Amino acid sequence: MKNKPTALLASTDRGVLLADQLRQELEDSVVFSTRPGGPAGTHAITSIADFLASSFAEYDAFIFIGALGICVRSIAPHVQDKATDPAIVNLDDHGQFVQPVLSGHLGGANELARRLARVLGAQAIITTASDLQEIWALDTLAGQFNWQAVPSQPLNQVISLFVNNAKTALLLDVQDAGTRWLEKTRPPFVDVFYDRDEIAWDQYRLALAVTYRPLVAPVPVLAFYAPVLHLGMGCSRDIEADLLEASVRTQLAEHQLAIEAVKSVNSIDIKHDEVAFLALAERLGVPLLTYPADVLNAQTTPNPSEVVLSKLGVPSVGEAAAQVASGNGRLLLEKQKTTVASGKKHTLAVALDAAAERRHDVYLLECHHRQARAGAARRALPARYAGSYSL
Image 1 (tube, rainbow, N blue to C red):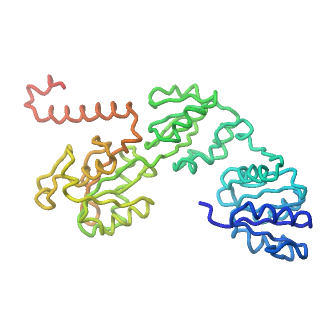
Image 2 (cartoon, one colour; image 1 turned 90 degrees about the horizontal axis):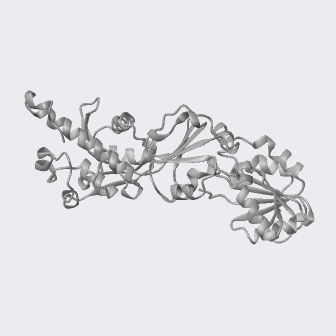
Image 3 (tube, rainbow, N blue to C red; image 1 turned 135 degrees about the vertical axis):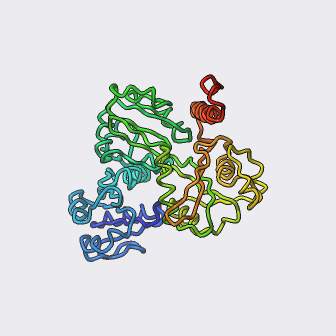
């Protein structure tokens, strides 16, 4: 989130007047100049180099007004990487041309340049390949749609394949505003899939996925994890936070569920102050939500417990809480009981957010549960009948 001001740097008298005009259009912006005088609100600096040495990390964006060479030489000692560098934009002091110089996508310099061009009636000079081709800017999609991006190799290599129109498989395991936009704006070299088993990998050089499950493929993968998984949990009082987190991470990995896709941690209301739950939610950057017994009791769960009912007045905590949070009566992961190294215990269940669920996922999940129930029933039958049991 951008929460620092924008600095306008002018080194000519004409540039100072132009900077003051832009300051009035840009919220939370400040004008700095090496020229004496200037309109009210202009801050005098002795040199651009000294100013940047002390202030480069203090602003979200720098707008240089003057020669492009001055801009480039001034910022060169301070440039680090695209994930943290501020947006840098340069324009001539006649206000005719506006050019992003640094952090065009992640820093927002491209959009800032377009905005300045609209204000001035100028020409924005955009040179990034994805913008020129009007295809997706892969390095901004996650921020745009509240996903977490996890590339299988350096992101620049993935982007290089994409902007060079490498044949790409797009897997959509979930649906949200972002996936609907991708479907509508799909470039011609991208094919959309809703089932990973249908992808013929020998036909593709790159894979993109909006998902909640890791995608292993013989080509580079850029996974966008959407926040769609709701964890339902119960635990022994005062279970150790580090042990609980490690256990949750292990179990999610074992069941091919991405921890980056977790949207909430959920339990019964008496656990609202459970330190380990609070710590887990904080570390994952999600809320801890708790529910009263009557809300949990309204759920029908696959693994109710008489022991839990006798102690807490509900037959299910983890499974019921996951169902309530997700609005989904189907569980991706039914209750798992785990004892951590200290001897304390916890349960974990996982549900997929109902709004994100695709019908294909429902079918696969129902097949999985039918097979599991059939296996349990088969094991319960006498040996002479087990071989002939069917759904």
